[in-house]
Image (tube, rainbow, N blue to C red; front, top):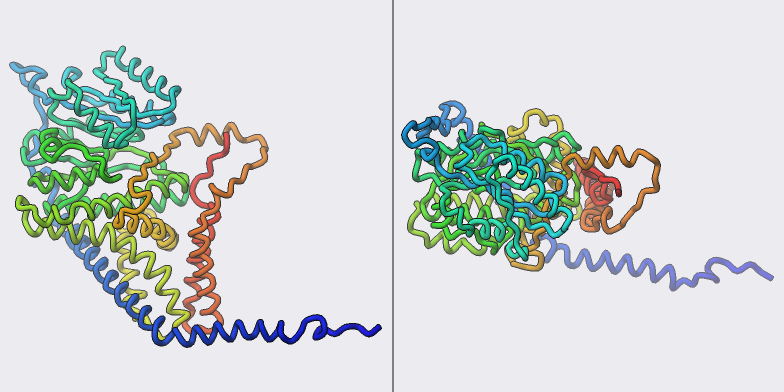
Length: 534
């Protein structure tokens, strides 16, 4: 019996069909490329270049202002009246304003003792301060522990109030609003707010309250954050670089030019009269702090930023917690912009300069353009030009401006300048989620009001590491470790890199491969701190 040939087993139609499919796809691509793909990609390049220029001008402006501030020494103490508070023999402690300290928390098992202890350790006349713990915890065990901690401090003579609700409506904003309704708050002049992982120094009130006391036009004193776990892992170092720029440059410039800067939600002191005049806390977005700051600013109130006062706190060190935080921080401002842009335009109490600054600089460039351009330009459009060589991106737009923007961002954290390349790659990956969240906020789509409290580890990680030294079989959960969006973008970049390696002439594939690797690493969950299963 003769052996059947390959042709007998696989008819010509099989090979012909396979070749026909590839030829047809090539034909379709060639037919739509010139009339459709090329013009659309050129338009995308132009729009991205415009956004890049807007970002560069914004960064350059802030760089010039911050240099002038350093040269001329425009410290807050020189711009506003400030003098230390002194004892009054006749009035006694009544000469000091009544201060409310609010600590909103939700299932904060690991850090509740730190935050309550730091608040109770604030140096201020004991009969002129009230510590208010706003506990929205749903875990009965944690609730009991927080209440016991409050009772422990109360037994030491601290005026501390433990407040709970029967619901979580409005999340943090709802808790703060409910706390302000208590009868004893009516006697308070100022309110200091600290999230559950924040630990102010004992002299915090002595250094901040005088600004509000001697300058009746001031509504808010915002202080800087100091990250106690910035060296936890590479991811926390990347976060430190981004946030240090925010505090070192953005906040400082907004404060020094009397323009506008947002309340960071914690480590600040408010004048209660300003909160009430602005309409109080609102839960219409996930950035209730920014919402209140914008409304107070539109009423004519001023804010001051004190970079010299640093309050210790914790950065999210797990990628899951960081993603949720970034979704909230990106979606909320975009949604607030949608809700308030016309209100800002119609406002008659503030100058046109402040309106332009809030709408264009604060919201449009920093909260919308910055996120969208980082992802669309560097992760979608630039790689696409590899596949469509007819579209050329000028060097000034593809190399020089991005490099300058990156260097201007790096000035906030000089100690991490050697990690700049890793920071760029990490920020490009995170721009995927920030862009998605920004679009959700602008369109008010699903998840627009999603609020998931950022997980704090405190000393729990050290305890877990000690407890899990014995060998154990790791449990792999696909839903927790695999991130499909990052993997999809990584595959796209890898494909573009392979195409450029074969057909390109400018070595662009080197960047594409490196950036694709960053997406793959994060896509497979190998970033941040891994918390062992207890």
